[in-house]
Amino acid sequence: MLNRLLMILCLMPFLLKAQVRTDSLPEQLIRRHASPFLKHVLQYPDSFRYQLIYTQIDRDENNQPHFKNYYFNVSADTYFNPASTVKLPIALLALEKLNDLKVQGLNRNTPMLTDSTSEGQVTVHTDSSAANGLPSIAHYIKEVFLVSDNDAYNRLYEFVGQQRVNERLWEMGYPQTRIVRRFMPLSEEGNRHTPAIRFVENGKTIYSQPPAYSTLTFDYSKQIGIGQGYLDKDDHLVPRPMDFTKHNNFPLEDLQQVLQSVIFPGSMPVSKRFRLTKDDYKFLYQYMSEYPSESRYPKYDTAEFFNSNTKFFFFKDGHRNIPGNIRVFNKTGWSYGFLTDATYIVDFKNKVEFLLTGTIYVNSDGILNDNKYEYEEVGYPFFREIGETFYQYELQRKRVNTPDLNDFRINYSQ
Image (cartoon, rainbow, N blue to C red; front, side):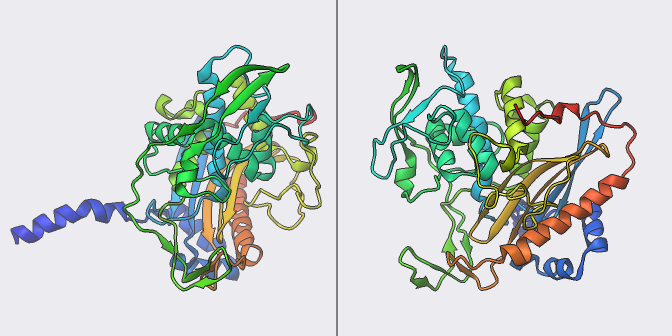
């Protein structure tokens, strides 16, 4: 009997770790209003791997926000490929590094020239989409949020460096988050190397960063396999689950906290805040919420990059326009059949604000890398219906104090 009790006690940490968290409010709300389509999805949590965090915001008499998170089918042990959502912390860390360097004349608008110093790296000395024809941290961040540009992310990743990225996130209290890959064909070793980078002003180098190499050790002890098979680089079917063990990892709760830390930095403990300035936050809010049609540099073809292109919750519906009284501050990601969005939604007319963070996996044939995913048929409708459900709930939810949302009103024409 004693031995059995000891065994149960030893196993408890593992049992607790694997526990799925669900609160009654979001579950009841979703199921009560679910369409037949959504009811079908909800029946198969193991297949669709959906997770959701709804964050309620209430302001006090001083307009200070207070938060309550509600979880639906959330577990850090349920892996999803974070795809482009990792661009959010990388952008924040790039701005933070600029601030930490404290180099006179160096800022986010300083031209940044990247040199190729190892196999597989690229040289970038110009950017035709920028007003001055030169790349910069600011321009890369614009591209990351406006259209989720991969090359822009790669350059930011290289500037911060794999080692600093992960050490800083772990230091901030995100030990399970792991960002080890650029979005380009590089080996595990290649992703540890980052190239030489120069910041120049009027032809003069004001800061030079040498090539770097990450010596970090990552915990890859937990094997992660997804699907029934996958197509390799030669489009040959490999009949076994695709190995995500050494891919990027960004648990949903970590993603939600990073979003909250940038939208509401004062709500987080100092240890979880990025070292950013008020001007950094103002810059971020503009491009996290600006539409491609409002951007002059870079300029986008709005037939391809329509306004709701990267706004999954509530709005990702073909070329549907977003109502003028609503703004969406967010970062999405999509890859390998996974769709993910971390969103702060503001309705200035109805004085409504809330956060939604969610993910779903839509790959009915179980084969990865074949580009046959049900994004349009299942993924986007899932997000749209979930977003609409919580928006309607927020419209009727009683608040003691009406929020002053003017901090998030932005002049996008400037």
